[in-house]
Length: 214
Image (cartoon, rainbow, N blue to C red; front, side):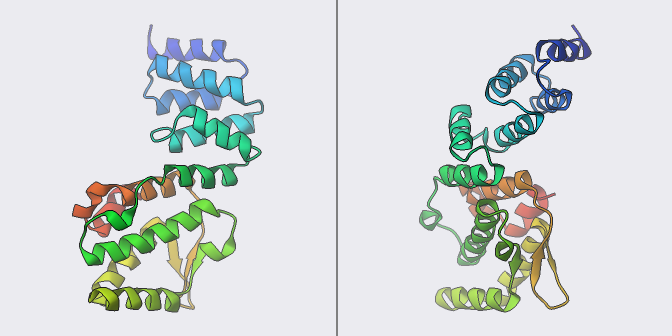
């Protein structure tokens, strides 16, 4: 059977699922029939409306590599199937690494800590306006404090932070402060996962977000 034949078969077997959902899962799993059927069965059994199907699929795409389908479903149900609340719980469950135990250069450590704070707040509180904006003076004070404690040059770290904020989706306003506009949870989660990956101690934040947040 051709890929087209398999896809048509999936549409017949999962008539209760939206065609767009079937296509997205089919594409996401790189047209692997067994994996696609497994995920479609899971979505079919645990969601009703097209909106719920889409939410559950997005959660599986974002967190499926680090959490089981059962963990994702349990958190979703416990959050009354609200996407934002579920995302916050799943992010917390996925955060299994204590970054303070990672040995790395001080400049990268400073930038990493601030990056994680920003990403954590956006993922955990997606509807809170205060986490979508960063006071530039407060950012400078935070950086200055960390740099003084670790005897680092703030200019180089500030340059990295500026690039990071732009890559993740912040724009600098006319008042000099930073504002985040478009909420792309999947993109943010990929950035978050990459920052806490211990292999990144050998990379610069500039390289990280050029590659990941595109």
